[in-house]
Length: 456
Image 1: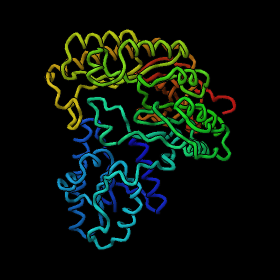
Image 2: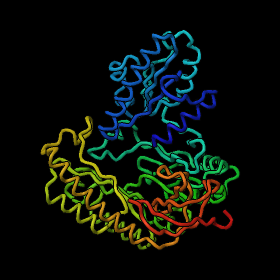
Image 3: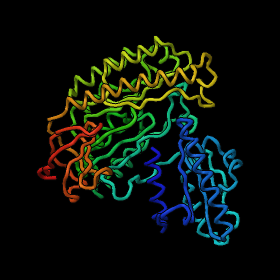
Image 4: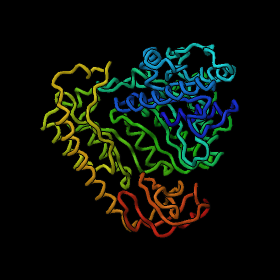
């Protein structure tokens, strides 16, 4: 989501005639878009802010203009405290206040004497209400993010997101369709629909007319996530977009109809990120996740029955307050049963303001690290076995660019979200090709040849 919103802010800059600076030392404006999901993310952001605060002091001594803006979740959470900690920051722009960014740019443009900027320094109030940008396309990319909703109403006990992103807001399907047509017209081949809790999308459209030129009529009163997926599938296929994904889906809100829509429409990639977080019912309840391990495993069975070749990835959180060795064993057992292709694995990090922050029976740092190591080792084993079993299979992949490790190879992605490299001409970048998965280099497939897909 931060990548998508950063791209949208860059587009605003371009629309006003700004261009990217080669580095922070020569920039007129530095914009830092921050995250608060984990404490480590905030620590990295604070380090980056400190660096640019120092650069600003140096620039001011040289008489050069330098505006410093901090945006995003950490800006929303800290507000005035951030400005007090770093007086060099000119603007603190929260998650619901991006609409003021053009006004900030205008103030910076007018300030040629390095005087105090004539605009409110703190913009973290949710007025006006959150609004979506018209486009989130990163220039030159063949894959694009399209946010469809914002915020979260779940209040998982460990999660800061509802406090920095606010309550759920669904984006008008008309605007979603328009962005899909826009990015499709600019050569995007794959779209990922985004939301903090993407499958709780819920739009009441009683006062909205059908989208002009839409290839799929909108319903008259109510649209849920599965209904939106049907519209998006039609729009994508008519806009030249060949693949669709979505992030992140909460297991408790994953409906049978959503599974049916995915299975019926091959435009949806056969990969799904399904965050389980834990394998113990006791811990899942303490986390306020809203489902049991049995419900999760049943959902996985339903998904794989409808789409046998689908790959699954997940998030796993260990070391939650009160977690025992038995709870950890239940998580390991769930992993053995599901066998995820990959996982984002981390240990509990208390976030001030969440329900879990004051929970008793904290797990020690040493124990958390050891438990996390066991989770990581098992996932590495599953990933290696899954990839090895795929060698020899024929795949259609999207060529994304030149490999960072070998300039003579192209990096590609399967619909199962696996990476493969193969030699080939740069003219294939942005197109779909066929290849045979012939070997592995770490977790990346090797292939010997790329064959352009007919009609692509």
